[in-house]
Image (cartoon, rainbow, N blue to C red):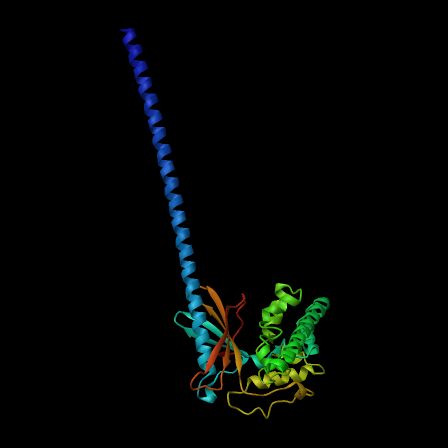
Length: 318
């Protein structure tokens, strides 16, 4: 009898151990399943967020591209009084669920790397706070590139004398074909280059600037110019509307020898778009405006993603 009781106790103890192990195993399996489910949920949420961000960025990119088209239409408006100014001031346009800040800058208001007097370019560097040593290297690099190009023109002229071709036909490029080539001749850091880039061009081939569209930084780079006159001039200029005479604008002493007023021939359009959820994208395009406005009004010269910029308060809204 006692043996039977002991045997039964051993059997019950074994069953209890097996039952306890089964419970522990079940708990571990449930924990593993829970961890896998949580990991899957986190991964799904992350992928959903990434997909959403990509969608918002694509929307911002599309808005920026649309902003360039809107700016171009404003620039070419056949009603002169409704044309958008090309002096860099901003307009804010609501488009779909987003907002686009659009700026148009006449290239003639910038300093041409191929033709502008180097003392004015040096003055621009000083105004922008570029280190003197870096600025000196940049000026020397610009002069060296111009001398190299000048030597090429001399060889082309000699060839033209024997081949009955003009030097223009022999020359295949200007000293600087793009503004970005400035970094090839000067040790400019990315921040320095981005400070300089909006104020220089390669599309005018002129030593002069258009005072009506030149940014204040360019005007302040002119030698012998009074800062108070520049600020008064820019303030009054921004009050002008398209087609309005500029005869009543304040005079800038000594600026006429640097000035060139003419028809708008090339302009940069910058469109910075912000999507509904805050995604941003900036597009920059340069257009050449032709004289055959009815048949072929413009040509695209450059189409790039603009560097990251902080949005600034717009001067006008539409």
